[in-house]
Image (cartoon, rainbow, N blue to C red):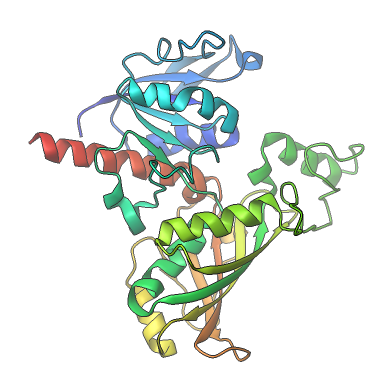
Length: 338
């Protein structure tokens, strides 16, 4: 790939900082790097590949978001839905490939929601691309090969989500509470040290949390199964990095356990753990592995299976997937130009 000019909006956040590491690890062809964050970070800088990169702020309030991002080839947005709604389409319209990590665009009909191993071909010439929720990505990677081979009639998941998914302040809160300090919870709805709670985002009138609704809606879009029955319970756990998911799913046609194992073993993006083996969040933190383990039959339902999935929510759940999207999009364009 030819060298490209890259911007990260939200460069000082957990996902933004992870993006910087992933770009370096994968030797992404960066000709120029521009970093953007809120006014609180103005004047600071980041050392990347031996050079100091100044943190800038986006010009807001006069519709000139294209000015500070003028000439950018790839822009990663990791600064929240409000910033993305205000600027992402403008930047994409100016010619950049924009990969948005926020919730702003994920369910927009004209914006592809992408996990490259599942549906990378939908990127095409699109310039605005959505990166899914960190809990949806590993679930979709598990279910995509099963759906392709045997169909998936329903899926149920309980997610055990790490504190880093709620941002840097939540991580600090966990650390403070673990040391016996800290007052009333602020970044999270309840005390997290030594505790778990099934609350991740606002509840709707039916009692479903925002995170649970996102998982269901995004999974349907990723698998292109708009009628898929999905239930989710999202639990916050006192773990710094790494999500775990207890998953149950039912197939449309009969499939043996060996057949399910076979399609999972052969699917790109999955590490399949045989028999009773599994990975815990601590095992996958710092890696791009999505580990599927403890696969077994569900004795309560016909054509149903149970398993456990673990992945690093900041890497494959966010930054690595975004960089893979960029790599895929650039390859498509290079092929078309050759």
